[in-house]
Amino acid sequence: YRKRIYKLRWIMRKRIYSLDLLRIICCIYVIAIHIFMSYRVTDQGISYNILFVESFTRCCVPIFFMITGFFMFKKQKTLLEVCEYLFKRIVMPTLLLLAFIQVFSTWLNGTNTLFECILKLNFHYMITFFIMLLGWNMPEPNFWLWYITTLVQIYFFYPLLQRICIDKKEENFVRRSYLAICFLATMFFPTIKEIFMVNIPVYIYTPLPFYAFVYILIGYELSLFYEKRFK
Image 1 (tube, rainbow, N blue to C red):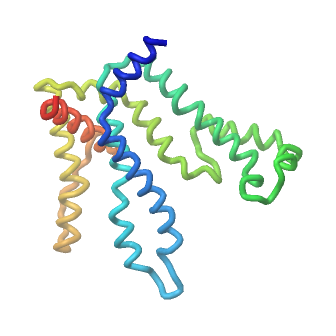
Image 2: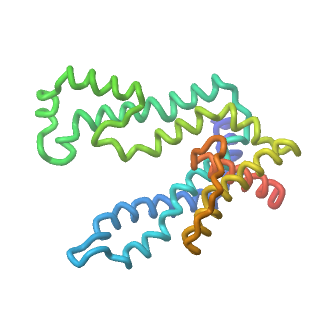
């Protein structure tokens, strides 16, 4: 019992409470985004006031990815450890949740009773459903779990990402060069093109053209800054 208490105290000392608060704020932002969806378009047309307010909440998902990157490379993991983490913490809970929603969706929306959902269970449909899941294809009404599939993709590339997420001269140069290229390709040139209405005949193709990777790497950069500034 004492060992558990000491371990809990050690974990509490290691926690960064400002990031916990940031997670809470971002959770509220996610809820707000889905509420705003019902008010974007009214009988009078598009509500630009709603769009303006909503734009301030759109930072929530990128921040979640950056927080993931902040902690992801604290400890170097083997491929087996990554697969075990994915299966226990992400894949299995997600599959169970999807199966539950798929079977009892009509009970959740009040159309049928729990017992009626069980009686109407179609095993052929469930087999088809699980075959779709094997391809990690989120069937209706579960499309909103896209964040989970994105997280799985990030961990799939973890062995590659961890090779450049090391605080050494060469790795820092490669990682920051990649971030600079992504900034030019996805933000700077498109912004210049839209603001000045000019055709920029420059197309930059980056390795790992997956936007979440950029936020993961930014999160790692922030962890380096935190370690040097506050430790």
